[in-house]
Amino acid sequence: MSDLEIRPATAGDLEAIVAMLADDPLGAQRESPDDLGPYLAAFERLVSDPNQQVVVAVREDEVVGTLQLTIIPGLSRRGATRSVIEGVRIHTDERGSGLGTQLIEWAVAESRRQDCRLVQLTSDATRTDAHRFYERLGFEASHLGFKMTL
Image 1: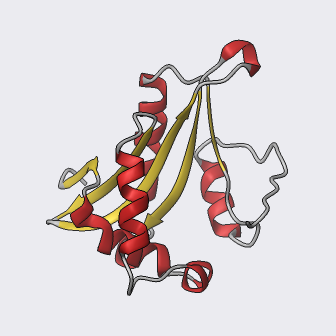
Image 2 (image 1 turned 30 degrees about the horizontal axis):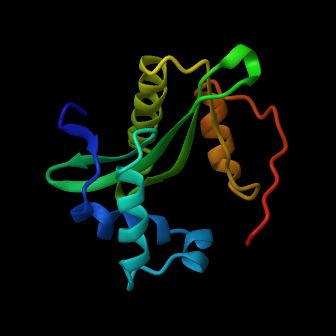
Image 3 (image 1 turned 120 degrees about the vertical axis):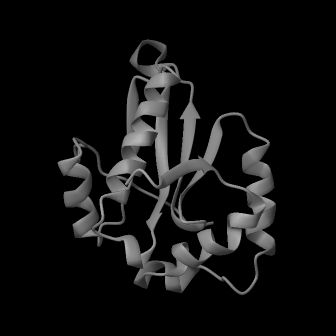
């Protein structure tokens, strides 16, 4: 997989990122790839925040994966900084290729580089394959998550 590049996303990558976000049963219900306006506004907020990174995995000039890494300074755990991995998506043609592992390994290494003491992520309760994937990479299902749609 030496032909893979993981780099910061650009506004030009948004169409491919949104297509990947929409390319599953959950994303198909909540994403709107036909209107990139809201995504561009969100992307501009993300790139202006030094604690946010949106990256893409590129192979042969095609965006084939993405994730968002958020760095959160905190008081708990003796003032530990933690990171949160969000929006992990792999292009359909690349699933099972090891790309997801490479992206998560990149995020963990970047979290270490930024002196994080904890890496966390959430996964929808229905994504049992994803849960097995994260557990294989060393993540523990240690908490029960809650959310409230506003």
